[in-house]
Length: 60
Image (cartoon, rainbow, N blue to C red; front, side):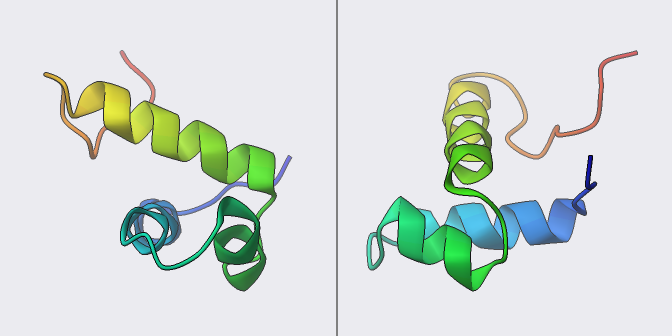
């Protein structure tokens, strides 16, 4: 399983949320799968409801 840095995740999420590209196009540009990008965006949106949107690190 490939690990992605927080910077890569946030760049991909922010690019998608700009609304200029589809999940597929954004994922391809960032060299990640569409499924992975969709999970990151869902997690970002969930955490922005009251949790830190930058918390991609595992809970302790």
